[in-house]
Length: 216
Length: 232
Image (cartoon, rainbow over all chains, first blue to last red):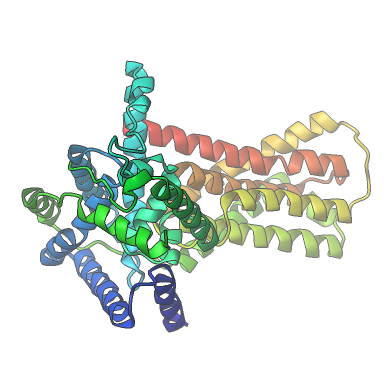
């Protein structure tokens, strides 16, 4: 039964990443099993496993925060806070379970807390209007579609799903677990996000296909 | 534009993001690696859920014994055979949900809102089907007593549940609070069914069932307050 669940999970991953070949699929399976064994060692007090996990998972967590449009400095802070929280609640990780849904559920919690704190601070300073007006325009003056602005224009829940699925390489069921949601809801959010991105990218004028990125 | 092209663009955007500083990673590693001790695992989910189930049952029975088991003695076998199994199923789902909410990235057996609604609708259906006395004698005075007793009993149940789940970590404290409140409320409703001899349908539909949403709302409110105090 466990093997069937595992196969389903990996097939789910294949479904959302059509470009992944079977070789990559097995690499991903190995990778998750490796993460599970590192987590088990970390829980048992192995400091080298903790360092390995930090080095291996921090880049993708950092990217997850950056792609939710927080500044580099805040992304660094969030990364530290996430690891400290992971450290505090590492006993809640269940041996043999996929690591990423557990990890991203905690990272999301940290990000939401950060968002609420920032929102409260903004409210106090009465600068809400200014901060929302500062959203990046959807198109650059040169006519090329600004992908980051298109991502920023997506509802937060859709953007988060897209980042987990396409950037962090999680499966539909893993994202559903991380977000306390259902696979159907995740599929719907991803579909809507892709529709919005497609419209935005297609409406990029004469330079469609040439995309603009921001350096942070 | 095809999905694969959008995938490629997203990969490019992700690739353009800066990597975390190596000094930062070293700092994190040394912070969590210093004095790293083995962390004992939580008991299996089914064991935690069973613990919560037993707590609810025990608190409800203790309350029933304290106030007197008059209600269950007045019920027919069919009434006992339907009401208590339905309550047992609801308590089991609520217990499993509370455990799932205490472990990040867990699969939830049911959403908390669905549990709350299905609990109220399920109990209303059972009461409406089994009882046919539509009188409203002393509707408010008796009803307030039942509501107070049900909510009062939910409190020790909630405290005992908190003790069982205190090592867990909820990523959605408000939702987890609602689930715990609903479970504690189910203990209160079970006690009322054991004790209360008023089988008037309006009394059961309004005052007994009201324990569930009110207890859930109180649980959610308390969890939100605790969370916001913790953030200050």
